[in-house]
Length: 350
Image 1: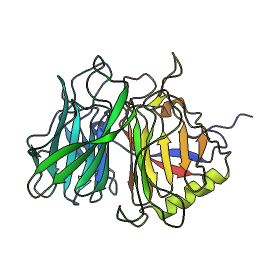
Image 2: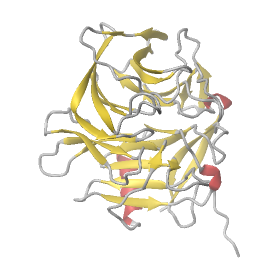
Image 3: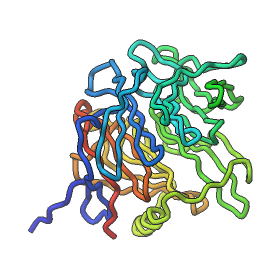
Image 4: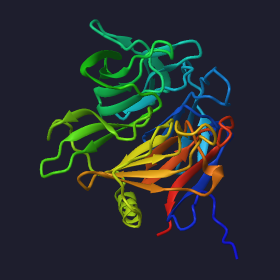
């Protein structure tokens, strides 16, 4: 007798995406989704596959109530393929992206206390990228972000990518880019994870995953012990669940090959990747696999947990941490054109 597999779960995989909310306002892909003060702020994105015009909507999702509302503030920027970061527990800084006609490197911020969008100003000495899309923007502190990825359009791409330090001054509403001297592999649609290095005096490293044909993560930046302020774990129970899950799997030093437009969230020593589009196949390119990168060992190990439910295939989606849960929001499904209105949490069955 066949055993029915619940939505989002591969048989005997030990995990599932459990639906917790559904709202048409959340149906979008290549958006940003950022947790700030217990709310998820969804900015822009594409509402359907095949369109080049990004949405200018800002939608606020309350995970405690499972409710979404459209923010009525003026000046919400039309953006897709951008990134965003919370700053000072107040501002949501949107960096770069596609506005429907060109790739930008500007910073636009939502003041969540006042409900107002502000176009921040570049300071003298600013050395911005040519234009950013499908890049990553990683928060180091309330005054520093690390921006990584390919610059310019498809016809102006270089054989390598660049790393920029983006310094912010929220009180003055200004920003300044500084290009770092190191180069990285040319990547687009990758993800970034700020993870501790192992050892008695751990530092931090910024790792880049996917966005090109390489399988190995790339160390983009490294900080010695004490350079980055230590923060307590935000999801201790989720860390325990992930540790139990990987203990049931077989680790490998080889990660997913040629993955892009996937999601990535850091949970303690783990980087949790889901979905995306593979560059290794001509057909059936959109994925529904869960990958966990475990830095507790040296060298770190990859754990792969496939999913049998094709309805959970996602590309251009986001995952977001809140209240010891990992949420999956938006993204196009298997056809690469239909945006999901569903919100799910990562559930464990072991």
